[in-house]
Image (cartoon, rainbow, N blue to C red; front, side, top):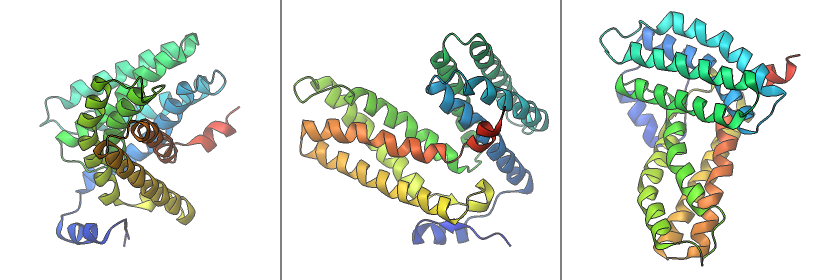
Length: 254
């Protein structure tokens, strides 16, 4: 019997009352975890412009993607967008591979690869497939916009338009943070041991406190604190997200 770790008591009641996924959905989710372990690794090393590890990481993604695609590209014939999404994913991965192989612009390859997680997010949400990493992807979109808006700013250079933008992004950010904190998380599914699960929970708690601090800064119109917390939401998230990548396989590759 599978035991799932729940981060809040409220979620426990929801989980007990909510039907579980079908076997087909369970298989799709398990294989999504395997794919994401390769995908997150290459997403990370291209972002760091690591010329040594990026080609190796891309090899693993190219090995795992065809297996996933062959198994699931016809998985949802009732969804007319499903096959189109898989074709788009194929194009994104091929383009990222070309850029990595050329080795000229790894950040461009990273930006291309960003489209993979957002395509999967839409695909799964559209088909009511619950997947923990999708909550992180949704949070990332709002977090990144806030962090970039606050980056390099001072209370004197943070414009009224900047502040308005952060204010507009805050509510969806908070909603996404709540979704992460309340989401059902199965350590066994993701291969997390107790220390790694505890680290994830700690990072979620730290991120939730940072989001709350941003809310207080915005409410108090403390521009210095808005800038500080607006940038502080990124490091905890990055550390959290990278827990789901397979960097051991990458480091072991010759």
